[in-house]
Amino acid sequence: MATATAAKPRNAGTGPHGAAELPSVVVTSYNLEVRDDDGFVGDKASRRAFVEHLDALRSHLKRNGDDPLKGKTAEISKKELDTLLKEGAAKEAALVLSAVEGFAQSLAFVIRRFARLKSWAAVERIVVGGGFRESRVGELVIARAAIILRTDGRDLDLVPVSHHPDEAGLVGSAHLAPKWIFEAYDSLVAVDIGGSNIRAGIVELRQAKAPDLSRARVWKSDLWRHADEEPSRDEAIKRMGKMLRDQIQNAEKEGLKVAPFIGVGCPGLIEPDGAIERGAQNLPGNWESSRFNLVDSIRQLVPEIGRHETEVVMHNDAVIQGLSEMPAMQDVENWAVLTIGTGLGNASYRNRSRSRASDKR
Image (cartoon, rainbow, N blue to C red; front, side, top):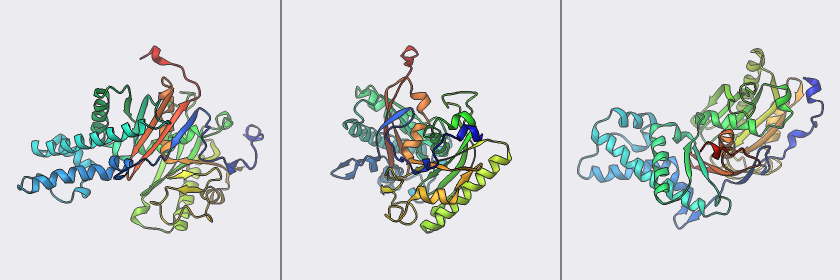
């Protein structure tokens, strides 16, 4: 193991972060903030926007006493909405489907606006991820938006992320890793930082099954919902460090060869030195301070893995979630990701090389 890592620079953990040039793709854009007269266009396709669609429908029905649902709209979970679709009375299911239609129209509108941008003009396929995609309601929204775009005459595929959204944000980190990792290790460490949760886990590379990492998976992970505890920034970082160390220790006990590498997904615009320029406003405390560097903080908390200095590479969380789908995107040249959650994450990519399965299409 020492021989395989001997050529690795000792200061490799300094970056670059948020890079456009990655081992297999060029990130042509991410964290775009498109505006119109109503504000940020992406807000029309957030989880909150879906709640607003459903709430507006309920408000109309309430005037005649016909609202079939109970309680506040924002408190109805994805699971409850899915149950209403499958098992609810006809009025309940129809109401949810009406909200699906309205939100699908909004998502299609947002995609049309993104498609006007230079970095998105050549996009052939969009992967949709984020927590909203996890539900049946989310899947219906994606499918309906795809039909709307097709009937508009747009030759654009719209597909749900194939990994569980929680795992996609970790698996994608494997596509940030340098080549030396794949020669001597079978797993790596990843952390996905969000406005409500922090998830840390071990990604098992499984290269023997698929050298292109299409079979990579989360071996184990730990989730902390920091939004419930409202910690300070330093408290959150300290807790994240413990999560990472625990995951590494457990993996090594089970015999995994864990690489001295941590892939980090974080909201916002990431500077090459690991600073966060903007977009981290939903995280606990001030993560955009000029006196704070997340990469340095992580390296201090996990300075070594397997007696080798830890290398940390950070990118935007939507970029990383999209990268989890990279093996399935080799039949197109330009593709993108949208992640529907608290907000709408976005990124677009151009493959460095591809084997056209137009052959398969």
